[in-house]
Length: 329
Image (cartoon, rainbow, N blue to C red; front, side):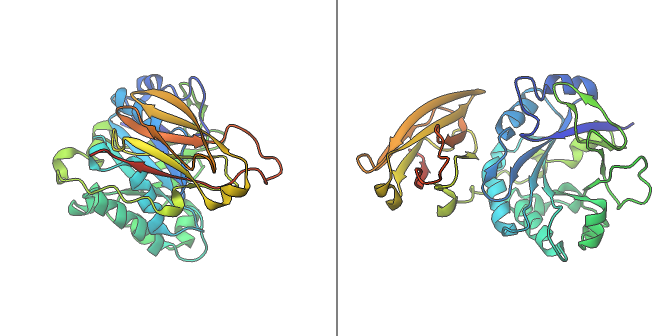
């Protein structure tokens, strides 16, 4: 028996995209979603996609993180764990996946840095290798960048090659055989249409057994990594940022002006707080006259989006605005 599944990100968004209930009716309940890109970019659809996968009872939930070549691999692993949250936030049937497809030279050390950090954070390093995080890469890149030792190990892997046969591919559990336009197994997914699609010869129950299951991992969760100071900053040249965290982990967020704001106009900030499937919006202004503004987060808040509602076409209006998350506990 084979199982096909889509993998999606913020590039597949909209009022009906993806329709996870419809996708489950097509394949039984398997899907892969992007968590983030690099250190600072939380995928804009991660929170809603992960919530929908859980509410629709998906048996296999892949959570992938795109590793940027120009950023430290460990720091990117920390960001991934912060966005997904502690072990208690990892739903049964979920599995972290490293998406490594860029960088010059041998990438084996960078891959292992990310995989080992994430495995340790979720206690997966206490399990056999075939129960730990997965590695994704392209066929050509995986060979030229020295990733073959991982593909030839017991660790599960996901290979991309848009062709009509699996012949000649690195050893793998999952084959991304099409980008929706070319390759094999093109599928019109509910609410998404034709997009990246992968196939495996394993059954859905077998896939679920390869992912995180509570009885196989120690019950004491690791603490969520601290967000570094530079990540708690909406820089002067950025309009948006976002962060996801475990359900109800934080009670409030405070904004305060960077010294650079003193020579700028007061900064208008739009805060979108995600909780229980809904967004609550708050608008605040930070400037010399009110250099710290605190907003209470709703109960069960699991993510926030921070944006500037206006435009700055000349690049000389905005100033950096820092923020901190905190708990009343």
